Length: 344
Ligand SMILES: Nc1ncnc2c1ncn2[C@@H]1O[C@H](COP(=O)(O)OP(=O)(O)O)[C@@H](O)[C@H]1O
Ligand SMILES: [Mg+2]
Image (cartoon, rainbow, N blue to C red):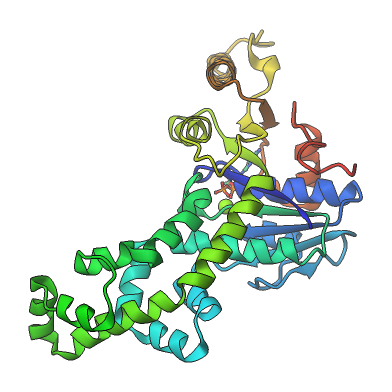
């Protein structure tokens, strides 16, 4: 089985960049690595050798031991239905208007679909390490609760959302669809609607066993995975990172490290401006900001007893494989061996 390294954290903190950077570093250390990214910037996708969108892993033309795949972030309930229901039921489900409504109402499906892809790659045993960039919709910890959420939805919560009741037999279900909300909709849209609600719920129910089994396997992968939470010294990413230490569901392990990205150089702490003039004010301000970032990291480490690592802020967006590898080479305190980025 491949080892898994999950890279998570709030939006825009550098998850995709660091997933790629860790993967390049691993490949260069002789670890056969697949990086599964989501929505990489165009130049990053090019550097990774991703010519077109595809969930099929492709080997990098110029980097030995590196594969990349790009998940379709819109993959969702349709993929789930196709995987867990017989073909005819899946087709009927996908055509049902309630299906679309449910997919929009419950974004966990997107995380769950990505997590299923992740599990497929891990079980393929083709790589030593699979680095997974978590989907933006998950905003961090939601990715880890997606399997439980989906099991819960298909197992009954969706039914309660639609009908306000527990799962009854087929005949009782038709009676349930006489509930006022659905009856009004039925009057407006025709009695066909009621049948479609019932059909939808029954069809969805057929996916339950497969989905519940897969969800449990995915949770096992989560438990064995290494995790890094990426953050910056800003309020929203810090809150998101703190959730991994505070609200962690028991199926998720504590992160192996929290990585502060876009860190200013420590030498800026006490700037001794070499010149006088308008630039001096600016240097002093950046010095104060570097100080603030250090304080934030120290506070986070003390409050959550977390391993804190840092990645420097580059003046230019890192996009080439060399830029990415250098980013990790210049990182401080990253436990690369524990993360599986160095061969054992
Ligand atoms: N250490 C860094 N120095 C400079 N720019 C960075 C750094 N890390 C990430 N970036 C840039 O920040 C932007 C957001 O990064 P990205 O990896 O797409 O974040 P996320 O995947 O978390 O949304 C990108 O333009 C990326 O090139
Ligand atoms: Mg991203």
